[in-house]
Length: 113
Image (tube, rainbow, N blue to C red; front, side):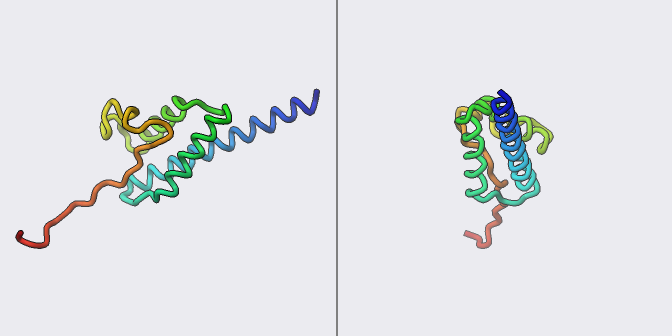
């Protein structure tokens, strides 16, 4: 009986580590984007993969991960994601895809054409 309880406790610790890592990476990427930096496609794909793994392993649910994204987006940007991507952002970015884009750079024409 002790090993079953001990094994459950280890699984809970590992699931906490995974969720903490998802939150850490997501917060870091969102802050980078807010600061005008870019997010590499590989960093985004790895984050989305961790989120999907949490769902597959039963640690989280797709809605919980999207809610986590909304919560952290609002914390970093100080406004809800709907302001930037619309009320139906989840329809365009189905789980596990996330709208992680750098802001467009201003384009200034260099010729008179």
